[in-house]
Structure formats: structure tokens, C-alpha cells
Length: 91
Picture 1: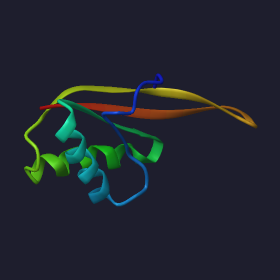
Picture 2 (picture 1 turned 180 degrees about the horizontal axis):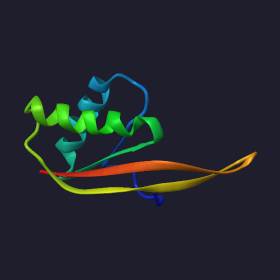
Picture 3 (picture 1 turned 180 degrees about the vertical axis):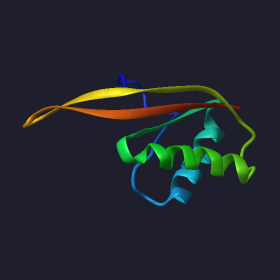
Picture 4 (picture 1 turned 30 degrees about the horizontal axis):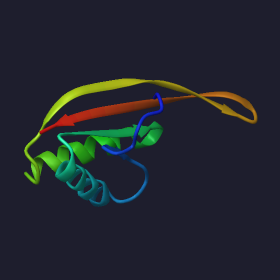
């Protein structure tokens, strides 16, 4: 994932899904598009965040684009590949 502004981005990690749902709703108050991003094990959690936000009808949005790929991370023991997902939502 290339470096970019995090103004309209929700980075999904290991917190409870409800926190990320609230973050998506909060981002939609100021932006017409929101990107939900996750890497590795949190990819399924990012999909759950988008689906739960849609099912709870908190914000009326559509999925504009989905990007998947692999990031190469430099570690002390060498390179490590980590999958990522980026789901772009639009109001």
C-alpha cells in the first residue's frame, strides 16, 4: 500500500469491530469516500466491518473499489510478504 493521507482511512487492527464501525461512520461525516484497510489476519475483520456497517444501515454507501495485494516488509531477518485489502466506500 502506497503512503497517502489518512484523513479518510480506517486502519483495521485487533480492536473490537464496533470501534471500526464507529470510525467508518465518523469518517463519512466529513468525507464522501472512506477507505477501510487491513493487512494479514485482519483482512476478514475489515470485510466484517464493512458488512456490519452496511447491515446496520448507519450510513448509506456503496463499495466503489476493492484492492488486494501483497506488501513486502523489511524485517531484521529479511523480507516478509503480507497480504492486504483496501475497500473504498462511497456515499
